[in-house]
Amino acid sequence: MGELVQGQREQAQGLGAVASGASLVVLALVSAACAPRACGPWSPGPPARARPGEWRSSAATAARGHSFREGCDHYLAGEFALASEAFRLAAEAAGPGDPGAADALYWLGRSELALGRLAESRAALERAAASATGALRALALAALADVALEQMRPAEALERLDRIEREGLAGELPADELLFRRASALGALLRRDEAARTFERVASDRTSSLAADAAARAEALRRSRYEARAGVFQERPPAERTASALRECGLSARVETLPAPGREAFVVSLGRYADRSEAERAARAAAGRGFPAHVWP
Image (cartoon, rainbow, N blue to C red; front, side):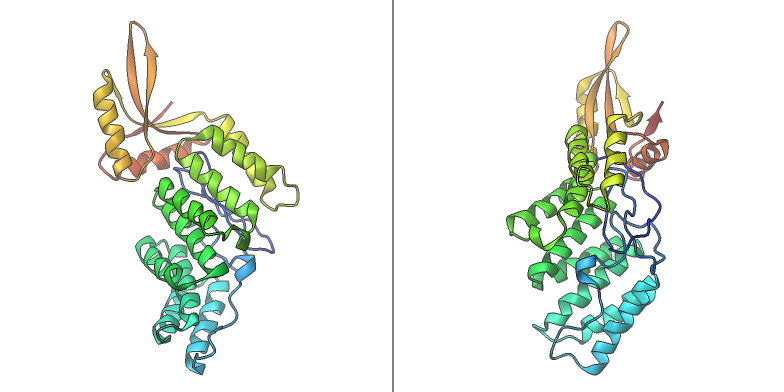
């Protein structure tokens, strides 16, 4: 999954998503009404099939409904801190078994993700997923995949996406968005060929608003140039130990043989990228966990 760019938002009527590999991701679709910062793999705007706007619990009080609607207004205005507080109040006001609680927790998790508060986002989304059913559960699991990608845990992101499939919930989300997420996770796992092929499946769907972005990402994966490395070793065992330690920290890493005159060297690769800034991001992630890393060339 690794080779994608974090960055700019693109206007579109539908709100959808995107994810990137070991480098994290770009916002592919974001509502013009939102002015989010590029905080995660998917847009912080509400997905097209689940726009906030209703408090669905028949037992909700007027005050609770007001908090939820207020959260929606703040969210759509890109005021994620205010949205988070409003959704938190709505969730806390919901009683046991109240279906509205899952809605509030989902949007609380999305707001926290938009703010870059990943631990808080994960906690809210896990609570939402535990009590939600149908489309909302699918959305919560997909959002948890987004959080995992932001935390550079692509294997976990892929498992979340697989769970959507296993539970028969894939039909609740747009197929192109699920494929885009999966391609991003595969790229972050350094499964570049699989990631490129999956992006190409999205690109082949000319009705998808993600087609052009997917085509660009597939091409970038095919022509990756910059490599993030966490060490070059003369012997394989220390390289394998380093790669294993990186994977235990949730990062993607593998050992590759580097031909050299009269000998071989062993590189711990964190991934190859089309853009140097992405490779630097992967190197910083490793350095932040105590592993010296650099970008080559």
